[in-house]
Amino acid sequence: MNQLQKTIETAWDNRTLLEDPNVQESIRSVINQLDQGDLRVAEPTQDGWQVNEWVKKAVVLYFPIQGMETLSAGPLEFHDKIPLKTGYKEKGIRVVPHAVARHGAYISSGTILMPSYVNIGAYVDHGTMVDTWATVGSCAQIGKDVHLSGGVGIGGVLEPLQAAPVIIEDNAFIGSRCIVVEGVRVEKEAVLGANVVLTASTKIIDVTGDQPVESRGVVPARSVVIPGSYTKKFPAGDFQVPCALIIGSRKESTNKKTSLNDALRTYDVSA
Image (cartoon, rainbow, N blue to C red):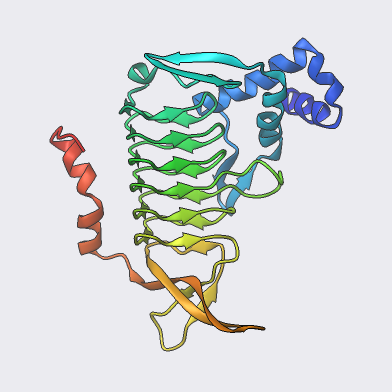
């Protein structure tokens, strides 16, 4: 692995090396390992999350060494540089037409892809549902038993290389039409209500105490979050600016609501 990383780092600094077949083989090896889940763009540690910048570099370098080709899926035709992911049956993944995932995205067994899109470098762990028209951007990290509801947009990030990808931790519930981008992390078992928008600069305001407590970039574990707004002064006057409000902690009633899809799977009922 150290040699593989060294090859990628060297090619990153000297793009003429991309003509070398051995370098191309190393880049494709990284992408294949991402596809199998043996490598990750970011991984949990005891101190939080570690971003593997060299792996992101390999993803970026993969594009210039790939040629455009015509891809077919039944009557559908695509024209792209990156192959589609295949072998879903053998991997134990349920894929509903027209779900699309690119090679280089890891999708664990026991996941369900409704008509949706998963980009290269993403990691989707066991038991997660990517619901209708949800998108999982490049390098996003999605934990176990997560529900990405209809129309959810999980942002991708390749550059800047040091930037953390969007991370949705285990058992989180992301409500319909939510948008989570710019490296925001949603911690374990948090619940985002419909239409919550989270960017790196979005204020996340805990309103459960006597005084509001503001933060950015991280939704604490088991938080229940809804869309909100606050007043901000501009030269032209005072206007409302979107924010996210933490209104409480996840309770048993919330658990029952968000475990609906697990119950459907248990009884082999289509979700």
